[in-house]
Amino acid sequence: MLARLACVALSAAALFAQSVSPTHFANAEGPANNFYPFGSTVAPFRYSQIHDDVPAMVISGMSFRHNWNANVYAVHSITMDAWVSTAATASAAMSSTFDTNHGVDKTQVVFNRTYTLANSDPSNLPGAFVLDYPFDVPFVFPGGGASLCWEVHVTAKTQTGSVFYDAVSASSSTTSGPANPAVAIGRFGTGCTATGMATPMTATATQSTNWLGPTMTLTVNGTNLVPNGLNLFCMGVDKTSYLGIPLPAVLPGTTCPVYSDIVLATPIVASAGGAGSNALTFVPAAAYHGVTIYSQVWGLDAAANAFGLVTSNAAMHHIVAPYTTPLPVSRLFLSGSLGATGTVGTSYGLVTNFY
Image (cartoon, rainbow, N blue to C red; front, side, top):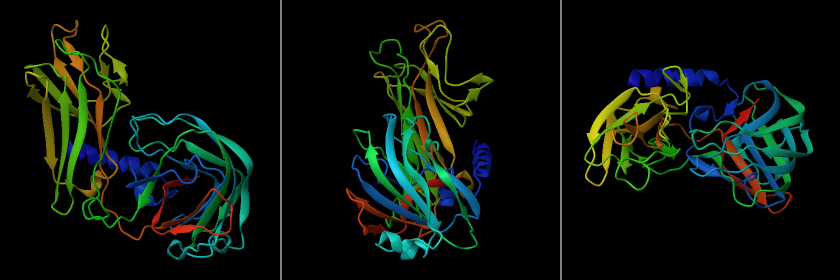
């Protein structure tokens, strides 16, 4: 199974050219989250980032992804202006004065434009880059060791609650910092109900990570399983199809969903109360970076339906490999104003896809 995970990780990484910054998180969930500047309910909002790892390219827009959340962030709109330039300095030396960070080629690329942003999808970990801001005017970035600076003036918003974007941070924490990042966990979907239970089967992911050990344990805890019955704790790496059938799917004649393929299945007898657990322990490797493992519990329940099967929701484990600091990005923000100066956060910023 782990060999297949490595292949998936390498394939996913190849899909991303050198347009995502920081590049380490092109196919991996960032270790932080932030609602500045787009996801905050405050307007106006002035915000800028400097990136040190963007290659020479013609940039026609930038996009971001939601930070994972079990609840769906709804469709909403924001209005803004934006500028891009070859930065006057590297990210580590970002100034608290907005204009000072721009080079002589500062170009306005968005003119008072209103964007409608897509809702989030809890089944994506990491999220897709659906928070999309195409430019009105492209910007030619020369690369060659130079840094890129972008700035937005957000002037109007329609969301009534905060929308969190995926972000990076050079945390100094020894338990979840750059040298030892935790596995990101999540869940999505709804299961069906086993015989004798009042509520659907559930699967919840937990994790224990020690890259320095090295050891990694991915645990799935099940509740409302087939009581005293055989339940298969299944793990897979594909939530789009299984045996040629598009996913998600429902077992015919039932309400029981199938959310992923099955690469590994472990039989567990649940307790009389319908509880069970399964843990996969292995040595973590950099090759698994960016891999998401999907888990679902399948219960053998002849009385439930003609198939004799019941299933849970899906649980997710997403592996993030250690990364180096300082990170090649810094931010500058000013909430509630378009004033000249703001607060600098070095080695901190939104994961940004330039295209």
